[in-house]
Amino acid sequence: MAAGEALSRTQLVAKALRAHNVEYMFGIVGIPIWHSACNAASAVGYLTGRPGICLVVSGSGFLHSLAGMNCWTLIVIRSSVPSVSWLS
Image (tube, rainbow, N blue to C red; front, side, top):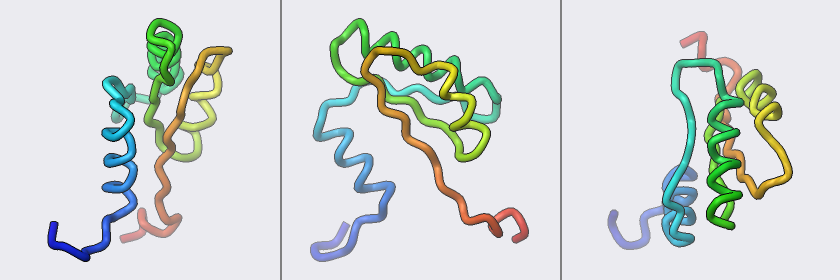
């Protein structure tokens, strides 16, 4: 990346996660069982004492991830897609 060039939001998130030494992130692409990914991230949070990270899609993915949330430290990262993108 050239000096002075702006970072994308994705690059900013990746850089922040790397700066905080995140080792594990859970997400299941293409399979609507996001609560399982959230359970796995929660378990890592419990076992390591550091927040577990779960990646989900917006809408139903985020809603279903709520089933995997419990009392352990967890960060859920949700995607955001413009509502008209599926029309292209």
